[in-house]
Amino acid sequence: MTATRTIPFARPWITDAERQAVMDVLHGDILTHGPQTKAFEQEFAQFVGGEAHCVAVSSCMGALHLAYLTLGIGPGDEVLVPAQTHVATVHAVEAVGAKPVFVDCRPDTGNMDTDKLESLITERTRAIGLVHFLGIPCEMDPIMAVAARHGLRVIEDCALAVGARYKGQHVSVIGDAGCFSFYPVKHITTAEGGMFVSRHKEIAEKAAKVRGFGVDRSFAQRAAFGMYDVTCWGLNYRMSEVNAALGRVQLSRVGEILDRRRSNFLALKEALSGQPHMHILDSPHKDVENSHYCLSVVLAGPLAGRRDELTIKLKEVGVGVSVYYPQPVPRMSYYREKYGYDALAYPCAVDISDHSIALPVGPHLTGNDVRYVVDAFLSTIREVAS
Ligand SMILES: *Cc1c(COP(=O)(O)O)cnc(C)c1O
Image (tube, rainbow, N blue to C red; front, side, top):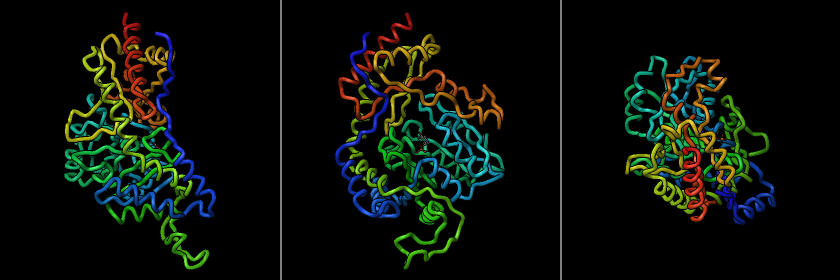
């Protein structure tokens, strides 16, 4: 096959409306602590629905850190985390001095294997730090049941889950806290940014305070310059007005963004279904909504060992592919050296890391792009398999 297109794996989708919103902020005097951030928080809460209280922050990593801090997790505590995830999910546990305990994932969805949770719970376990893997919602009912039985907090990493729903409920307000990312290649972007969400008002208020140095009143609430007290330890995880203005326009377009992702995902999935030696990660349940970050194909049999070759060949014909994630977190040097690594403990996480390939489904792909990705993928597979 010869390359006739170049399709990046992901690309931020910025329109003139976003550019205008950013310029409007830059024409004013308020660059942080302002009305854009407030409005973005309110609009995001409306989008999530339920009892969402939102705190805009500078990254998802920051939101995750705030989640563990405000839920009182710290040294001596253990947190169950998936072995297959972005490293931020686990770094946040380390950030408060708690110990991550890795859980293998399920082969069909890549999500944390709920059946394995209870055997890993000790008297030190305080929380479950789950991830909606690639936007596929976790099975929240059994997870919340385990949490209730053992008195555990539940932190949802929703970085790839804008638009993901479990039994009609948007993720992030099912557990105790939910954390979103607005990094450029996520569903919506603020360049850098994130959102801390909680259905507990007092947890969200605490997070808002820690986000801004532990100051007891916002800039706007001060009677005069400098009139404030510091009532707790804090950090600076604020989102600027420029980022918030960008995020508000992106959020207003989220329906269109999600529709395009869904139709690209479904078209790809249908074209690849029934192919031998591979399966596609997706939820088997009808009552959940995947937010379709990408389409991850797990290769098996004679194709399993050819993954790297496939990714190189696909790049050569202009198809941007990726791997989510190329290492299970416990195999990464920092975690391996700190906690040791048992190569047999996470067979499913290892399988996905070593044998999967993520195909693009972002809103930048047209119908013809999707057909090109299918043709490229199938012809490349025939090449490496022959
Ligand atoms: C991208 C990502 C993060 C980190 O998000 P930042 O906003 O870059 O901090 C965390 N968790 C998951 C699952 C992600 O995909």
